[in-house]
Image 1: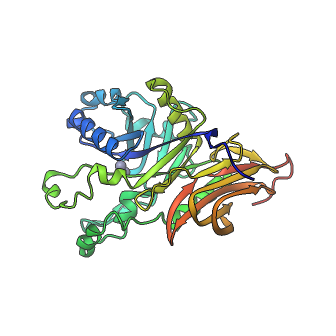
Image 2: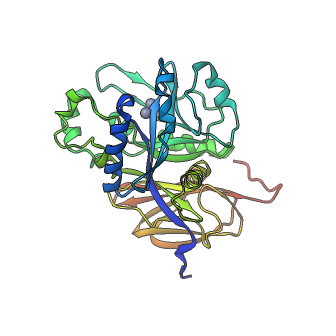
Image 3: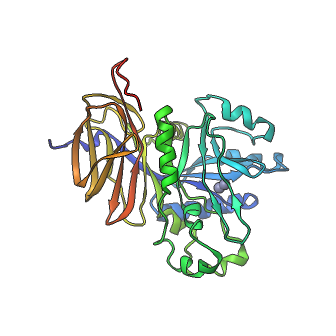
Length: 356
Ligand SMILES: [Zn+2]
Ligand SMILES: [Zn+2]
């Protein structure tokens, strides 16, 4: 079947989990904005660690949200509990107090988004072992950072190979670990958990900047790497409140795929109902026709409940769903992992729920 109407959705792209120096935020918004323009992205989700003191002094950061030169900038908070269990919190207007973390993680609030970051994060870049493992798997979070630019790279970087790892960055971006993918599939058997890619870039301190002669760790260079591509029914309008709402809703819904666009721009990839009635991140039913559309003819895996059920080179393919379950797609460029979709949740007959 030929798919003629690809105007059934709008695709926008952006980056999530971008740190910047708090005290110089005005200057950094300018820099980040310029770099976003050059990287041709539509939105940036900035992230600030919760200030441990002087919260009041930094409350203006929650007023950052806005359109800057057509790039929508949204501010979020990276909350941690005594340096452990990091998660991004979007949609609040004030800093989180440590005593409220528990309540926030347990709440089911449609107006906020909770994204677990670097769940298996650890590195020993500076000889000291840092462990940022997520332990609160039973809480109510919306999604997980499946692909983390910083941590997936740092995990393979040891003190003795920093120079070589650095020289080849970003062509040596690591892929998401099997462990996190397995966990993601496992959690989705119980409830919906969305996946996304995060950068976790920090602006380098001055004394390190002089070593970054390749400018590999500049905003522009990483904005061209791991990106989130969001499907919207209607495109952006230029109205801040409306557009912000659309983007955040789509993220919470999982209407997105994420990819390493440094390998090749993945724009145009599609995974959803063949007529655009729903996208990945949403529910469908047995008998539905789902469309997988790649930007080029390339190796593609269709995965159901964590098990590969189809693996072949495709450009565009319709797939009739005959079994309930969670379906997601991984696309390769050569042998490198390139694109990850979110799941489509196929629901069966009321009682016919297959035991998983
Ligand atoms: Zn963190
Ligand atoms: Zn971070």
